[in-house]
Figure 1 (cartoon, rainbow, N blue to C red):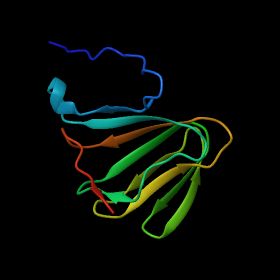
Figure 2: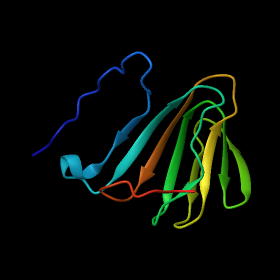
Figure 3: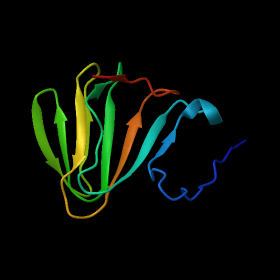
Figure 4: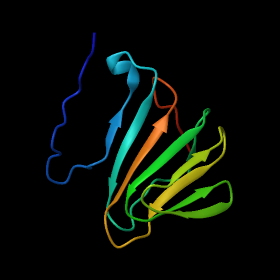
Length: 111
């Protein structure tokens, strides 16, 4: 058996980032499909599990712990559990990321 969540175009002024929690369809993995303008990104936060990012388009600066790293299309980054992290679109075009959470729900502590 399979289940599907159909794509819906965002309303004007609404974020284009998609948040998916696996529990909604009976899956063990959650993720964000990030679609961010230049200068946009996440606030500093952490999770009780490892987070994996896949850069699909654009240029991102990731801060993990105190270390900053630039990432480009095709790059994959992994942050350890319970380590503060954030990302920002530092390029001139849209940033598209997949942020993978190995949990059926997204557990996040904003710092």
